[in-house]
Image (tube, rainbow, N blue to C red; front, side, top):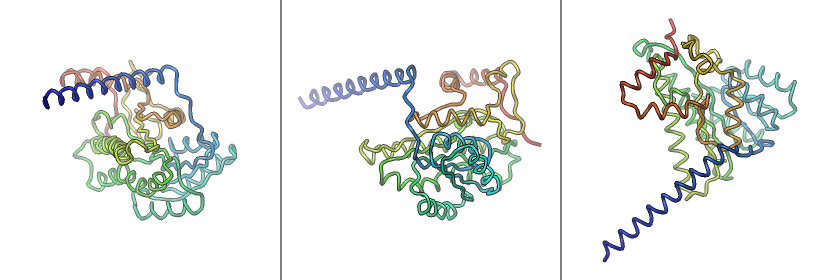
Length: 308
């Protein structure tokens, strides 16, 4: 009798799970087809790391145009100030700059204290700063590898330790992390870089689920992980582009990528690849045999060449 009762409970729970899965598949499909309305960021305090150039600079400009209060962090204060001054000529939104080496935990905590005192609690945190040296694996020095991990993943952790507590206290906030297509699939000559970007993916997934479990599903803090392909920021010094697919695999502009990131954040999308077709292509390739996956990579014949 106990066994029968237990079996019925298991079947009921499985049925409920299947119904929930079907509902969320329907919801996701509906949202994709008809687009979720973008939430306003007017009045939000948006902090962007690596705001001195590239994607970070474009993010700062576009968030300012949407009425957000923008906080720019960069290790290069000269470029940081240049970003802010250029935006101030066009937009009226408040914009602030702070010099900070985001790989240095003490500096991050010190800057976080200043931001809170001088501006308020950050409500949108964008971990954008990153570096991307391209070498054969055995050509990397130990210092280069350590610096990669310090900036590309440990900085995310220090930033979240500094700014997540106020989000949890108010149960309001959004965390955006820049990973990479190399965080979904390994690419030659970017072995340590790919490892850091895989780490960003795992970090964001685990933290999101931890908050969900700890609050019994009541956390309203949102997470978005972004996976761009190659972007024309200067980091990708020797791109390898198969001319047959140049319309699909060419470098994206920082302006375009920033717009896609903001769109994902405003629509509360958890994961976005840029361009979007990667989110369809990669899972399909992953189910193929290993040698077939190699054939697909050889067919696309794109990526990066090692720096001399």
